[in-house]
Length: 455
Image (cartoon, rainbow, N blue to C red; front, side, top):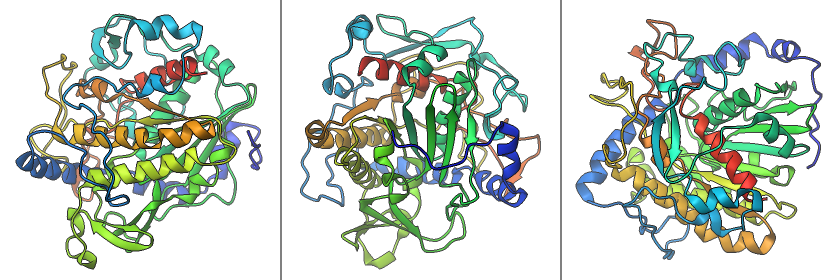
């Protein structure tokens, strides 16, 4: 791993003090919008898709490669694809677990053990996911554990994880759910050690007001974790800088250099993204517009293309950049899509997620859009595998879709802010992100098992 060029502060208090009040206020104002424009577009897309197709399909050519004809995975089942195990043979220590079952298939079972952390023991929880702090009425959502079919998922061993990643580096690349995942991992690891956030005076701020990169360093283990804000994974420009408005020009064949320039610095890269692809966008290939989504009606007179096609092309470009990068011999993981659980309305029309227990498997049919998007991610990974195998990189699928479909109870709802909080006149109800602690901690458990199995 190439060393970071930042100066490490001597304490977390110094790190916090470095950030200017203006930046903090800007970040809070912007982050409070929370990607809820996605929820509105998501529900509209579900209705449009459901009326035009009775089954998910990823056979529509993506804008980047109109002649692509990759095999469409079977999305009628919640089963994970075999991508996880096709890239590498598991180590002897993990053979028993992998041979017994697919860790991504199962149900949520009652669990009386305490969570790995709370809002009092972990300092990294953003208020917007701090369901304990803001009084989520039932903490029943903390009393469930993922139970794979046919075997047990080991609990996360923070000390073992930090020892296994000693001297290594990991990057989370994507949108606010990538940040949600990162914070879960930092909180679980806080049982053993807390990192120092490396702050510089040259932090780049995205047009949306978010820091492009954040870095956390575990000095005693030489382990670094980085977060890159890149909601499309590819190069994208906003023609109007006012958040939530304007038009995005998405370059489907060009990876976002803000993270792609650093690929060789990392041993592990976790890619995720879905929500922002619903933003009004025009798709470009070779610098020329080739299509648009429904939100960009009339732009460039471009033909409307499926959102899933753009997402598939973006993931393929991102994975291709990783697989083809000289010097990268690590692992790249695609974290699959998770559904929003708004019921009885949308985020700004009275929708909420007030359930207090998980769904049972089969109780809720996978919606067509989730199946379509997961298929697009799987296809993009499969289409890039050959390049990765030639160059020594390893591509894996972190498939959490089935497990998270069953957890409508694990979202903040209206408990990610003080009572009475509002954003632009609409009461904030979050059924997209996940409480910390909460079901999202499963993502780190599965991540650890995958890294251990594919050494």
